[in-house]
Length: 192
Ligand code: NI
Image 1 (cartoon, rainbow, N blue to C red):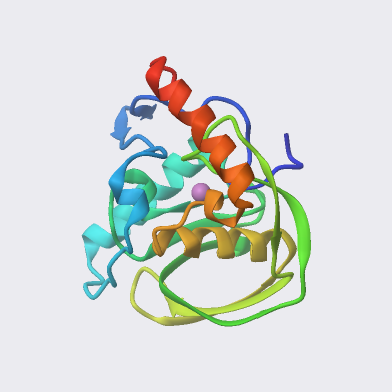
Image 2 (cartoon, helix red, strand yellow):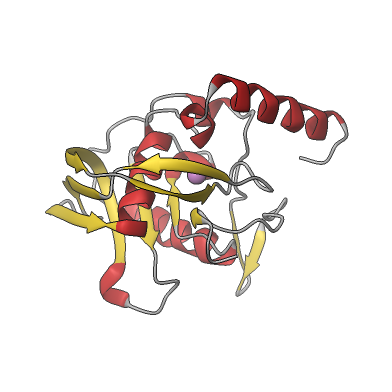
């Protein structure tokens, strides 16, 4: 399923807490949870609890085989995302971005995209091919990400999360309504 970008994977995401070496981590929240629909707030404290949160986000993301995860997806309404489009293969491409601001978005790419908070669906979504983002790392130092391709897609997707937007907001109204109807059916059937 490596052709589905964003948060990859069409398999079921974990419904309950995942056991990672004895430590329970928070489950991924799904479409329908209010925390996914609101703007997350800026981070001002760069302390040990922020570091612990970002460690947990990586754990949850890797366990779910995602390439990115935004804090609201584990129920924390803060402007933080983590990303690793190499699935743990290249530590230099493992990023924590706090308070991200898009400085540049240019070019276009079309591709499949999924979201761990909308499991079982993938969509063709047009994104910028090249994105430059400024923000801070987990210790509060200023960082700048200049990314293309899958990383640019992922950064755009995660920043949407921080603004209370899921990838459904990038679909045509028709496709979005159809998808929401399918999700509501699953919710009703207890399959969400
Ligand atoms: Ni997502």
